[in-house]
Length: 335
Ligand code: 1HN
Image: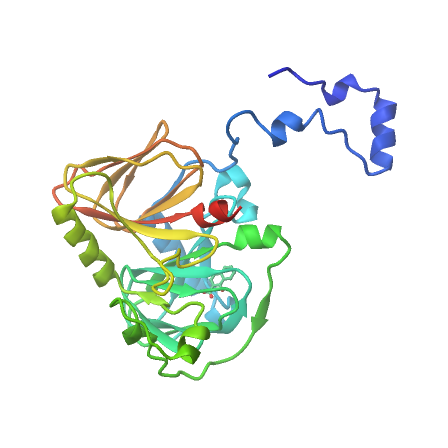
């Protein structure tokens, strides 16, 4: 492709005149906004160790009471986007949230979609639109756009979870805002027992009002499915997607979620992907190669990869490992 003229090739008085009129010449920037054959990502392959985050999060618990934080979170920020922009990728926000025993994070609802992946601790819960969802290690809990949610903790150890939101995209669209509330009445909505067995209620009013029929995906069930698949499937990654059980589509509209199992001593080459991805290790040990970089993930560590990166998963340990993945595929497919 031909080299295009630069801004410096234009007379400064002409450029000043353009600026005065809120005008910009396209051609000096055309190859930046439209690079040949593939995007030039700002997202850098980045790695966050849980052992580095946890003491700082516990310290945040001592420094800032929950009433003064609303949500006590350390954001996993990608230096390629500028730390202050609080992005892991251009679409994905990641944060590690701490809730101490007896603490309560009050109800609110907002336009960005969120999920929580539970990292450590027992007996905390998230109430989503009246449904109380217990939080156990590896569980995925959805708090989709517009649904009320609050967090409480009846246990006696700190609970930590990973928040994943589409905040960077929604904020960029100037569509991000919150409505505050207090405490939701807990209702026995019964969605826990209603879905996940290939059966759905026939009553139209139950189905019609449930855009998000399943709010909690227990890790024990996801793991069991992976282990069962590993017994019969010989080719390709052992990977399961978190879907809406009524439609079979991605469980949220912007970010996709899945879990992968890598057997002991197995190497998996991930398919080339136009979407940036996040990797969080639920169990085991993983050597994660992103392009030319190698990260050794232990339990609860997190990493992100830019679009079009070559990604290889090596499990050199004697136990299988289990990885939670968030990706930008749903929004890319829609666009
Ligand atoms: C949020 O609502 C939560 O409810 C956590 O726990 C992190 C980050 C940005 C915007 C909203 C929560 C968040 C958030």
